[in-house]
Image 1 (spheres, one colour):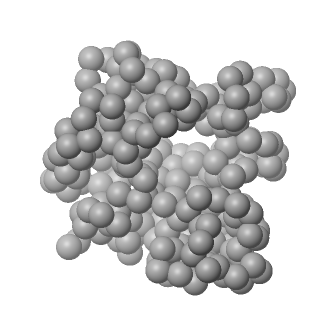
Image 2 (spheres, rainbow, N blue to C red; image 1 turned 120 degrees about the horizontal axis):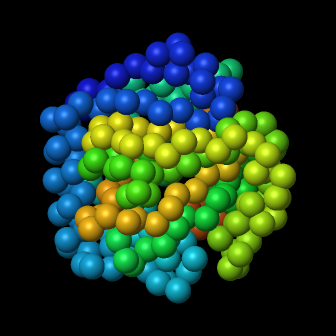
Length: 261
């Protein structure tokens, strides 16, 4: 099963490396996005109004969006996109200096109007059990996502400031409250995304999203890639606990398939 993915341009690669995020218009074509959207709607409907994979509704993350982690393992179409050769090539070029990448996680996300609030500004990497931060996430719009539906915003250049700590651990602990100086950085403009457009952000880039102000749900698919040479640190993490990974060895396990350019 093939999904056509376009190659990122040199300008897009350069923008990402400077700012820590980039918009990729038309990353996936209309026909493939329509098929992915159909699958996503079916998943959301099957899971009910609480959103896909909604558990522990009291957590701060669940108040921001519903998610179905590892959707690429249970749905072959989403899996095919995550493993598409061009996705791997794009990830390698964007990260710069890595020879290959592994899939860290796939996710189907839904932000319901009136149910989910804003996604607090945070970094993705502070939770991870990898020994290096060469990691990024593709955020693909499965429906048209105007800015007031909750498209992501990014603090440009924040990926250059290293590990800033965990968020989503308690109310009011977002990156801006922990590090007020972040407001000195440029905040990306509100992005109006069409279905098939994607944004990409580095795992150290501080990012967040407003609440969905539209009547329909915001549907998106994400896939995160990391440096294939990264070593396992043994840090407790639900996704890796119990897999038998060896500390200070690469993530050589079927859960983390490797893509080479």
